[in-house]
Image (cartoon, rainbow, N blue to C red; front, top):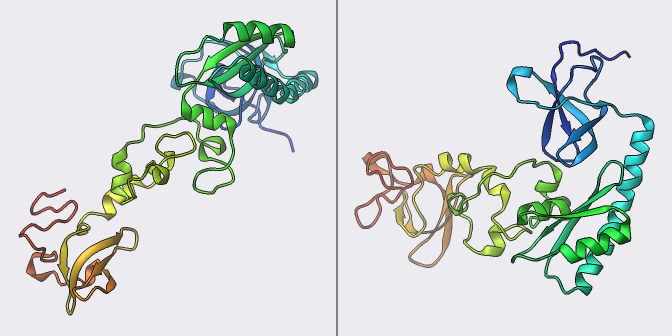
Amino acid sequence: MQRAMNTDNRIAAVRFQSAGKLYHFINDSLPDLNAGDFVVVETSRGVEVGWVVQFVARSDVDAPRPIMRQATPQDLLLREHYRHQEEKALATARMAAVEANLRVKLAKAEYAFDGSRLTIYYGAEKEVNLGRLARELSQRFNSRVDFRLVGPRDVAKMMGGAGACGLAVRCCSAFLTDFQPISIRMAKAQDLPMVPNEISGMCGRLRCCLAYEYEFYQDARKGMPKVGKWVQGAEISGKIVDRNIPKQTITIRTEDGSRVELPVKELWVGSSGRPPIQGGSCGTDGCSECGKR
């Protein structure tokens, strides 16, 4: 089947790594370029090979550099050759760092398209001078070696592996291209335990997935009485010890010590539209009458 040709000189969004960011390049000289094609481009780190993910209108982005050419089979073979060398280079660099007693976490080694430069991404809690190590590795690999400091989330993304939740591949490595700010408020809104091991990812920071359902929980928890409040149903009353926001249920402990799970809508709410709470305040999240949050 013949592929559709792109004749409108659109901007090509190019990716260099799986789940990596998109970089935009002018597509003036390759009218038949299609999504999925590999291209050779010049970046701030030198000449690189990437693949076209999509096209966008020229007016939507600023693309200062044009695509150099479409990648040839020889280009792809060369790229694949150095991809295979990266794991060996990383293992060698890690051993050299240990021997030099450097407290760094080397996350990933990345060769340039032609092998002339090797970039090693690392994380460190304190400033570390890696100049001597870079010179030693440059001689060993016969390539220029650069070290680039990245944050804890980027280290986890590059190293890959299973997530703290049990997924075989971490979200950051599987599909996240950018990291959005995550706050402790997101965990509190989902009634998660404020225990570091429960809400932190492999990077040691708050889990990125806390943002996935944050807005849903913000809406779903409105009108639900808080844990610790006393509520009353048609034939039962007790203190709230737990609540399930997605199910819209609460678990109460009655005066005789038993635990009962009840839908919020089955609580005896009286004429005010909310359960009577000891102390005279409704104690619900997002209450429109008392304004308590």
